[in-house]
Image 1: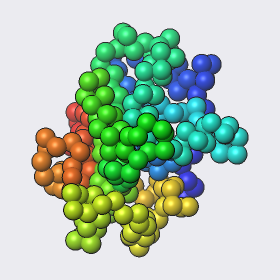
Image 2 (image 1 turned 90 degrees about the vertical axis):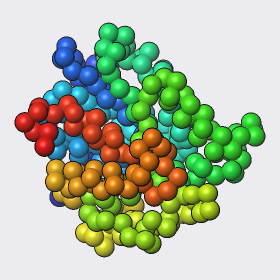
Image 3 (image 1 turned 180 degrees about the vertical axis):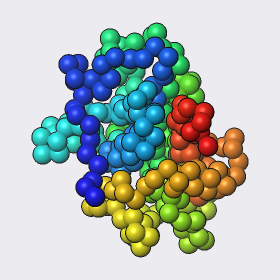
Image 4 (image 1 turned 60 degrees about the horizontal axis):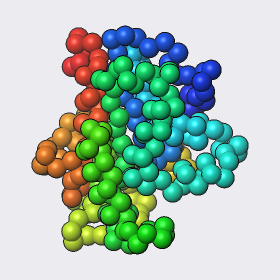
Amino acid sequence: MPLITSRIPFSVHNPYRPIRPVTSKIIFLSFEGSATEEEYFECISDLFCEIKSKIQFISVAEDAVHTNTKRRLPEQKKMLSKVRPRQLVERIDPFKLEKEDIYQFSKYQEDEFWIVMDVDKNWSEEIINSGNGKTYYDEWNEAIAMCQEKNYGYAVSNPFFEIWLLLHHDTPNEMDIGYAVTDIHAYEKTDHFRILLRELGAPLKDKKHIAASDYNVKKVKTAISRAEQLHQNKNELCPKYFATTVYMLLNKMMEMLPKNNHT
């Protein structure tokens, strides 16, 4: 099965959605990752075709994401390799201004914007090399505060987005849970979850790319159920334990399905 390919590059003359249904809202996603998350949500929009006909999942960084890797400009490569949570949020307002004539955001107040990000290094007290003396954790808190102020959703995985993928295929064990970033366990760079996905028969090619054949509707619903069980405190949207709130975003998407298919 070939890897999922990105949609045709966005442009004013070639928007994903040239005609907007009056009764539909769009969920816009701003990704921290430029490959795995993008491909996963492409897969979701294919699996739930009723959603795809009504909404599109668009990375706010689509101009860079949908440019062929070999043709990306230096500033595009830099943006994709060093995206931080605050940048994900800050990118939304310019996007809305630039695309107002296409998406009519001012008219469709029901549109939703979601940030998809991982805990990993973002909870570190390490100083960011930006000259302002802020730590990664300082910027994380700023990003969350901005989301709350602007009423943006945020889907957080602790420690990585790969645990959301894992939940489609297996229930996490104590070793998996041990990698969570907590008050007593700092971020630990590891290939543990990529190795586990490979052992489960759902490997990430080049450590980033997913295969659509590894995911189906049943597995998605299983992942949602497992994630709900892991998320112990539903009021805590940035869990300081092994959990992912990506399921909340999936539930939002599935609410768009016709009632007879939302089971």
